[in-house]
Length: 263
Image (cartoon, rainbow, N blue to C red; front, top):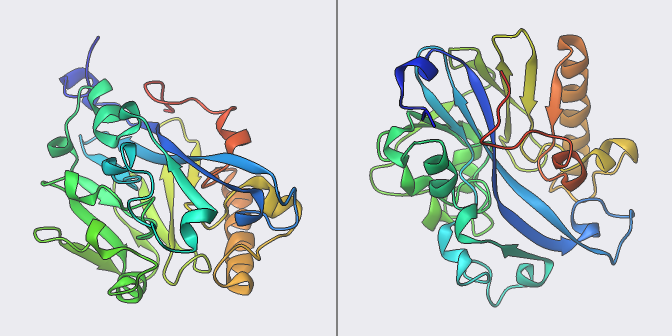
């Protein structure tokens, strides 16, 4: 099988959806008031964009690989440990998902973090050659904040390009602020060669139920989260873009997972 390090494939822009494990939680964590009391498994998702110019851009890095053997590693002894528990196998690591595509962490040229929660920036240490991008407002809010465990992303040798608002990162990839889940949260717009556009919304919208039932109480700032989410949906409508929700198990069933791709 040809890998993504082969010259022929590097000429094609592709978007890969990477399954990076699950989290077990009560439905009320992401959609309060809809099936409260029901335990569900929600996907942890990363995205790899291979651009026409050969860049390999990773959006979010998932939960740290140590959670395979110790699911409670991050939140043991806290109230949050009972709310959300990682469920992770060896094949759910970002290293494994990249290896299936013929890539190593050193081959990733860029990492975009939608935000720095432990399930979105847990493996930022695995990409020694990457440029990292996060909103300045978010980075400053996350420093020394226990809600954003610094041990996974505030690392020696990892330097962040701090962005101030909507930014074109080139090669048909841009980011725009969608605060509410966290200060300075950002979502990503990917323009594919086919002309189709996809919005990777991170945790700006957890799942479709948030939109269907107009439920935002699970977000840190519900009022701001609602404003950001509705603005995101309006943008998607204007662009005829597909919105990929942050943790929607039902939507995942309808998508093409890596090693398949969107082009």
